[in-house]
Amino acid sequence: MLVASVLSLKGGVGKTTVTLGLVSAALHRGVDTLLVDLDPQMNATTTVDPDSDPDNAGSNGRRRVSIAEVLDTPTAKVVGKALRTSQWGEHLRLLPGSERTEAHNHPDPGSKKLFRLAGALNKVSPAPELVLIDCPPSLGQLTRSALTAANRAVLVTEPSLFAVTGVQRALEAVQSERAAHRPTLQPLGVVINRFRPRVTEHEYRLAELKDLFGPLVLSPVLPDRSAVQQAQGAGVPIHQWPTAGAREIAQSFDALLDRLMRAGRLKTKR
Ligand SMILES: Nc1ncnc2c1ncn2[C@@H]1O[C@H](COP(=O)(O)OP(=O)(O)OP(=O)(O)O)[C@@H](O)[C@H]1O
Ligand SMILES: [Mg+2]
Image (cartoon, rainbow, N blue to C red):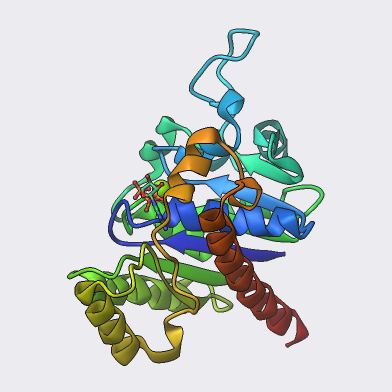
């Protein structure tokens, strides 16, 4: 089981977009995938499965079980109750997000709490091939739990003024969780999102990031395309959105998924 956590220090840079793009690429290829929505904003959940909103009562009037209850009580029984199949396809299961997950976002949690998510993922049956975790925009307990459960960290940034410090701090968080709790965790690299070629500021920031982080800057960079917002608004995987912009960005996600899956194979060979 390859577990990848998608994170950034800053909000709104494209974590959910990258997570969903990788989900879409994985489904396109028939990879059995689990999407974990750790963000209390639960944007990933509402995109892949609007009906599974756990903050709405189900038909029996009871609140649906979400990742928040899994983090309260990470037993196989609760994990089983929270797991849903998604409307995106039979190869995608979902541990849905909830506003209640915010209660698990302590800025300085004890080690024991950080392992709850990792423990819960080991209880998903049958085990998926790939787990993608969409993190909230902070480096508190939820993101650190996601790193403690992951083999690979995917850092996301826009090519903007504070990109370097944001990436630096996210990399430090990865290194500190690796040292303290998760020896198999490695950064896959940094995804540069919403890049616009020939925009001087973007070209400058990309060069700056490459200078500082070298091969950790993942290729291809993701272009800014309105198809991303259109497909998300319609709740459709980017691979199924019928425009040239969607095809272009879907191919970029295919390449990022290749890189991720290769990293997973290397890990299992060792
Ligand atoms: N490459 C892109 N091209 C066009 N729009 C994009 C692109 N990437 C992201 N967006 C849009 O930018 C907005 C923010 O993206 P997204 O929700 O993925 O960021 P996020 O980092 O998950 O935000 P948050 O920190 O709030 O969770 C969304 O409306 C999304 O559709
Ligand atoms: Mg998000």
